[in-house]
Length: 184
Image (cartoon, rainbow, N blue to C red; front, side):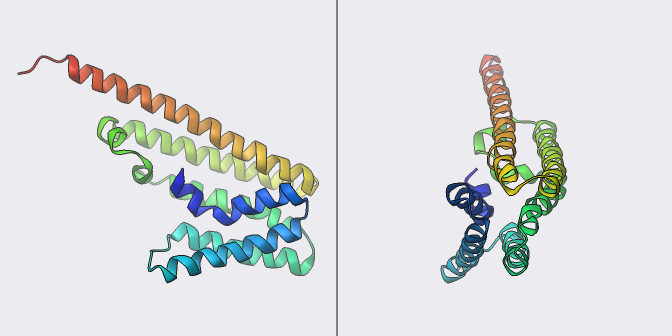
């Protein structure tokens, strides 16, 4: 979750500020500044900037600027769909989840299990992208804010909890089965 949080920092800050202040324009401006600041910080520390961070920054700048310039919140409201679709496409690649797994899970889970959960995440991203477009184009910014904060985040937390529980049980079963085998 730490890596995902870093990848989506400006988006998460936007949602938090929008919820706290109720002002989509202030939240948008802060998200743009935070996204730029994050890249500057990483570059100054000579740390690599992940592709997802560049993509998130580009989308924040383009859609955020359009929202601020045209005073139309729908631009920034549709942005999460583009991110969800892009992430969903990346999640269709086999093995993407490996960087997020702790060593004990990577060593004890089958490729089929890990890839299966990766595809489940991709499906969720596509579903959330479609739902976000529908809500952004037909409902108020307030309803959209609730969807992003509770519906979208909630769906991700539910899938994370299901994945964690399932993977943990599989790892424990595998370790116990290995311990029960007689030594040759």
